[in-house]
Structure formats: structure tokens, C-alpha cells
Length: 174
Image (cartoon, rainbow, N blue to C red):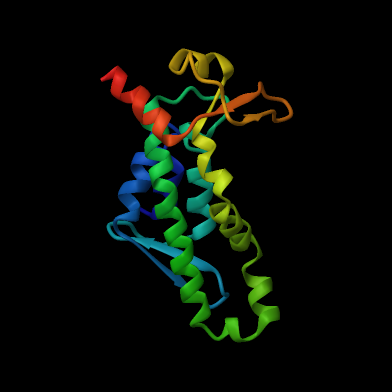
């Protein structure tokens, strides 16, 4: 199966699981155009690293309209670091190419990848899978007030939990 087709076939409910499996066999390289390319053992062809990042960002645990389980949220959070590592590896690979020696060429080739690099370096973005509706937050932690409340245009406000809070709530369910 072609890697591009595999990515397209992954549902938002299985994104974290499938990308986690792919990252175990993933390899990054830079093509002749200066694009960051990902190949995955067992699949034909390759995809630009941004395609993989976009798929990750549409994971069920990161979608505001979704209702992910606590385990999905923790898994998505854990996968963040592995996605960040993939981008770091691609940055290192880019630095070893001829394009990196020419700042204009490097900046033209890699604008969209830099956008995702910026997101993966932002500590707040990493916590996004722990954004709960006020009702969900009060269900899991009735005696706790959120440290951070976020209001995004077009969405109900979200209250941020910590990974430790989610792990504690998950332990109570088990």
C-alpha cells in the first residue's frame, strides 16, 4: 500500500494509534527540492512531513468537537514528543544539505515545515489534548478549579487539565 493512501484511510479515531505504529518505522530525508520527506517501512512511496503532521492534528483527541476518552488524550499527548522528534530529525537532515547553505533557497523550500516546527516547539500546543468543556472538567475534578480557561471563537470555553490530573482520573475509572 502506498503511504499517501494509508494516511488518507486513517480515521480520526485511529489516528494516534496508526501514527504511533508508523513512527516506529519512519525515516526522514530531504528531497532535491528541499522538502522534508517521510518514508515508513512496509509502505510504498513517501509523504511530505507536513502531511503526517496535519493528520496528527486532526486526531480525535485534538478536535474540539470530539469527545475523546481520557486514554486517547494521554496517548495523543505522548505522541506529541515523537512527532516533535521527527521534525527535529528533519531539521538536522536539512542542515546537512546544500540548500541550507543558501538561506534564500532554504527559506523558500521550507516555509510550511517551519510553521509546524513552531507549533511543536510551543509548550501550550502540546497540552491542547487536555482541554475539557466545563461540564467534563467538573465531572472528573469536581473539587478543582482550572488554572487556565480558554475561549476560542466559535467554540464553548475550554478548561485545561494537566497530564497528571488526567492520569489520576483514568486510574479512578480502572
